[in-house]
Amino acid sequence: MTGASRQLPAGFAELQRFTGLWAGETTNARIAARSSSDMPTIREFYDAAVPRLAEALAYCAQFPLLEMPAEAANLYRLMLGLAQATIAVEIHGQPRAPGTPWPNSIVLEQGAVPFG
Amino acid sequence: MNEQSGAGAALQTNFTRAAGLSHAPMPLAPYRSAAFFELERAQIFERAWLMLARVEELAAPGDFVVKSVPTCGKSIIISHGKDGGIRAFHNSCSHRGSEVVSLRAGHAARFVCPYHRWTYGTEGQLLGVPDEASFFDIDKKTCGLKPVACEVWEGWVFINLQREPEVSLAAFLGPFAAHLQGLHYQAADHPVVLSATLEANWKVVADAFIETYHIPVIHPQTIGTTFSSRANPFARLIDATILGAHRAVSMYGNPDFRFDETHFVHNIAYSAAATGSVIAAATKEGAVNFLDHPAVNPVRSGSWSMDVNHLFPHTHIDCGPGGFWTHQFWPVAPNRCHYEVRFYVPKAESAHERFQQELYIGRVVEIVLEDLSNVARTQRGIDGGGQEFMQLQDSEIGIRHALEQVMKWVEAPTVAQALA
Image 1: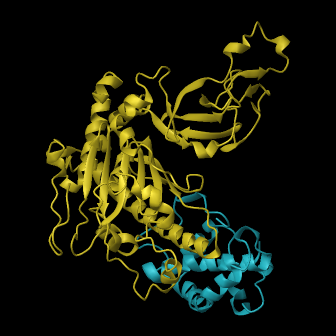
Image 2 (image 1 turned 90 degrees about the horizontal axis):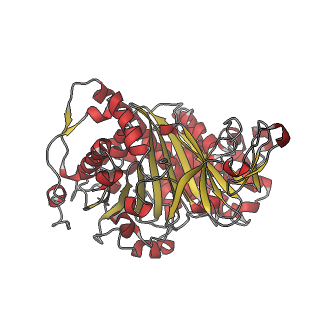
Image 3 (image 1 turned 90 degrees about the vertical axis):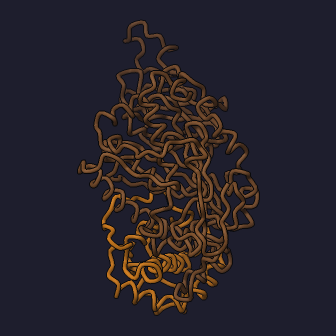
């Protein structure tokens, strides 16, 4: 899926430009977004998305988790991408744990339901 | 039993002596020797009961999973038969030996070999042979899928690669069974599964997950402050129990751990579902039955993070405040293993819960990544051959007992003697 088809709900337009990288379909894709990005890229997304996190989760919570309309699901996956960006910003101060390789042999064989 | 003494004083332990184990340095040759690796394959992995699955993976008749046993080059079908029985088979056709099932899991009324369409029932029986008339007095009754010994204990599915296992699963489990008997395995139908190929002997990796001495050093940002504190700066164990060939250790947890205000998103994620530990994903309320079990936080410590229940030879069943998870360490070569971790997390019911899980999974991947680098470094050091022995301290009792048992099985002519 391309970024262009990841339309966000009205009211979240300023986050639209981040969907191509951060609203990946799976946890693996969102981990890859963090692991392969530099800190300025991660930080720019984190700083833009954090002030909208509570609002975005409340918006998505209007719908059953397994039956979100496409635009809500796009916004929700973007917030899951924020969870990944958070690992870099709040835990490591760098994209991955210090001294660890990317790419590496770790595979998420089965993720959490949904969007895992 | 060891209780923490006053604040600021070190936790004193005496596990190794109390268990009657030696205090001697332990050999490193079993971590690098190709000859020892071959003995482990033959004497341990081809003789011990090996945990391969949970029943929730094949809940209904007709469900099946295919598991690999990389140590022994096996592919095993575990089938929930129409008659309700759970059986294991070699994934190999009775015609010319081809692999029959290429899916990793599924639901089927029958198994059809993709090579010449020989067809088997869910109980392994040969049902159909195309152009059967061209074969020579084929005895279909003896041409079913070749069975592998299979038993189920508390929802865990085990196999044994001996044609006639020398001991029953119950005899193999010994006191381990009583220790975990009746544990409520919550969210057992919803594992998050991570795997990795690690450049280290399987015991190097298993060892890393049964000691906490390394945690303040290797995981300072991810979990260091959860497992250690000023009262227990070196993360000493709070309990250790020898259970036949198996063992259990209980790990310290810092009761004062909180995310500080710089962890802005973490605080939003965890505010509604505090679990007392970042290693947990479930809520405290859902874990009450689980936490009541006597093997979970066995000393009922207020400073507890998790228990490791090490099921011989290569499986850890871990329990924490929010539930259980497993590690498996499959030997592949003297300095390589296949590692798999399964975190059983409740299916999220809200946008908030699933967000918290994403953060949790992200942290877990980082912890595994830290260990991945560490075990490769450990193995390179061992392979260099400069050290013949390792010095083990009291909180590394799990490593000492595991290696003693491995050495015992490798030398024992019979399984009964290995278990004696």
